[in-house]
Length: 307
Image (cartoon, rainbow, N blue to C red; front, side, top):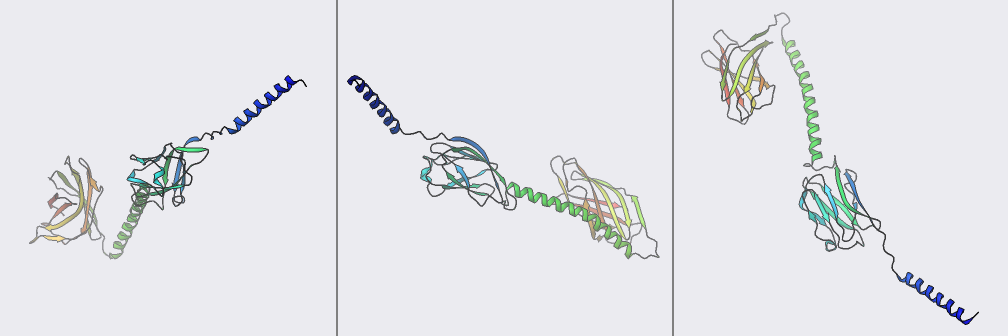
């Protein structure tokens, strides 16, 4: 081979070797992380474990919650110096690590309803959390002041109220049956129903007497009550009954009293029934019925009601 061709081939080999060495010396760039937003559901089974949060150095991770976060409720455990101070708003916490994490770092979040959540922050090579929406699905382990606990309590109260309403009809039928059994089979059984007149307007409440029922030794008085106060509601508490027209007024123990509406808002009306044992009476006797407001000073008295 001629000397000039040898020199040219040697030069090509040297250049190839130099380029290969340069390529081997150049560092490879790390793979680009996928930035993701996801939803994290916390239920009764998972609340006791540490949920992973993927964080990256210099990148912000936003945690959002359905309920407010307690002031200063975000606490980075162990190595807080690896993070910028957490930023909080009403329902969010923003976390920014200064560098990629070599080992996991615990995080504790306290919510305003008493829920305590625990997380584990770590750096993953392929992805990082831009935002994590935390949804609470707690039932048996929900704190007493949480929304889920309140919903559960309301549902239980509604169930108990429905049960009470159902049992009240049964109890009323049983009570009436017991009264009928206590009556003599040989004596006539009186049942009376007639209208009753009387009414008054006091303290912006209009009370009107409507009906009298008598059955198996009991008297039931039915009234209509209307609240004409534009600013205040009226809540019925109890009724008091006196028998007047004799030598001295006599108190009649009220066995039961109830209103068809628990609270009378301005402009609303309600029926009120009062039950007591039928007294021995004469044509001169009259009833005086007082309606007492719960936690209020409005007391309405109807007098001169014919029995």
